[in-house]
Structure formats: structure tokens, C-alpha cells
Length: 277
View 1 (cartoon, helix red, strand yellow):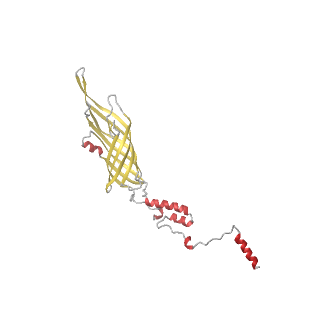
View 2 (cartoon, rainbow, N blue to C red):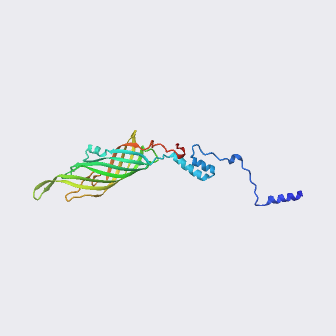
View 3 (spheres, rainbow, N blue to C red):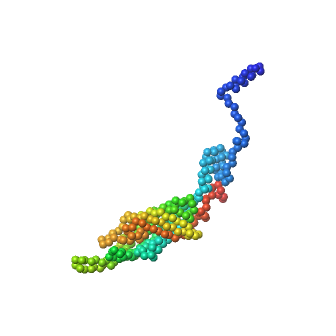
């Protein structure tokens, strides 16, 4: 009887589909607690055993803690362009200046509008006339994109596009015409010419905080005219908000004041699990 039992146990040990399982040590089978401050959603996924989803959610949560999460309406900036009035003080014969309002959304996309006036008085050295443009309005609409959207709104690197339009009048006076055949000198004026212009702009610039809510911004712009009004006698030399009709570059220098639209738009928004009623 005893010999039979030994043979039976020996046969069972030789069966190929039978394996011995080594007991797991208790200390190697413990679930490590999630880091302090982990989102409640991640903790629940750890508890339920869905470790893959928990790791993905934990990574997203860590990124949210590293990068600022700005609200939809971050701030509103009001500013004035002082570049060309400064240039005019140093001898430039034309100027355009305006005020703008820029809405900062998510600290990334910034719709903007600008209203201003432009005027000119120029007697080119190599020409025989004087061009005068009375102060006339212009309007621009467009948007900026802030490449530094993960950082503080105090410092921004911007790419901007604009669509501009102006309607204006101008005079061309003191036109001197010399007729060598008849030996005559003629002087005449062309007054009350009216025109309009539509153009587009693309530019790059920076904005930096000076003190408190005051900041300074500058932008170099490349622009081109889509169409403009002509008359039988002349073409406009200067366009308010654009500059000389034949130019392709512009520059703006703005002084700005920023109004936060949130309690503190520079702080990271708290996760939902940390929001208290």
C-alpha cells in the first residue's frame, strides 16, 4: 500500500503540465502610494487596478502642474502707438498714430482692433510740388499669436496679422511746370483730392512689462496694398495708417496698460478636485 502511494506521487511529479508556484514575498507585492497631491481621479484609477490609465493621467496632471493654465479671457490691453510722432519730431514728414485694444485669450491668441489718425506734409527734394494730407482716420483689425504662451503674460513674442482701411483727402500744391519751348513757368494746385485704401500687414514683435501694469511693445511689419483710389490728376503719396504708398515696411512702438480679467491670471488654475465650494 505504501509502495503504491509512492509510485502515484512520483507519476504526478513527472507530469509536464504541472508547475510549482513560488510564494510571493509580502514586501514585493505592495502597491506604492501615489505622490502627495495627486489628483483624486488618478488615485481612484490606481485603486481600481487600471495602472495604465492611471500613469497616463498622472503624466497629464504633472504637465498641468509644470505649465501655467491660463483662462479663456486672460487680460485686456489698451495702448497707444508713439513711433511715428517721435520720428516726425526728428524730421519725418508724415505720421500715423492710433490707440488699440487687444484681448488676450489663453495667453495665446490675441484679437486686436486699432483706430487712429494719419497726416502728412512733404516737399520732396527732387520733386516740384508739396503734398499735404489732412488728419484722416484709419482702422485696423487682426490678431496676434503669442509663442511664449506657457510663460507669464508679462513677456510675449508675437506674430501679428492686420487688415487696414482708410478714407482720406489730400492736396498737391505749388506744382511748378517749366515750358522750355515757350519760355514759360506755370504754377498751379490740385486740391480736394479724395481717395481710399485697403491693405494687409504681417509682423513680428515683442512685449515686455515695465512696471506694475505698464508695458512696452514694438513690432516690425511688412505690408502691401490690395487696392486704392486714384483720380484723373494724381495718385495718393501717403495713406493714413500705412505710410508712403510705395513703402513695404512699417514700425510700431506702443505704450500699454493691461487690465487683468481674472483674479490673478498669472497663477496656475487649481485642479477641479482642489476647488472648494
